[in-house]
Image (cartoon, rainbow, N blue to C red; front, side, top):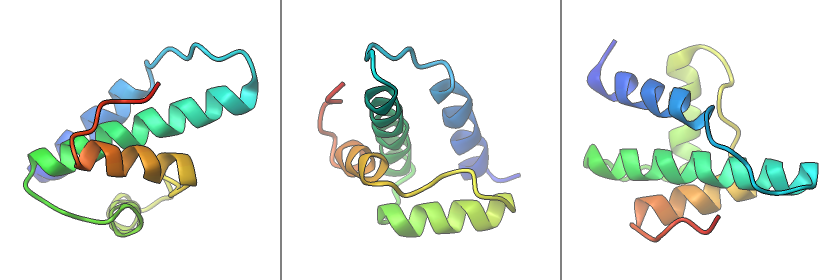
Amino acid sequence: MGTKQVICTAIVILSLFIINSCSSPTCKSSESEYQEGHSLGKTVKLMGESYSCSSFVKIYNEQAGRNIFKATDYFCEGYKDGLHSKPIKF
């Protein structure tokens, strides 16, 4: 397993522990997707890469051999913010 995959796997595990502060299921889902994307965008930037959201998700899922990430609007919004070092919105 390469360094990039190890870092991404660690981020995935950490994102599972994010506590949501929203009361509605839709809000919780949106917040969680945004935070997951933001963390991965920051990780990609730290690795010196510049994948777009959809290409990162496609490549990662192919390497993992299953559909771990989904490039939703909220995920990709967070991913772009993380990639461009913008503060997290939630």
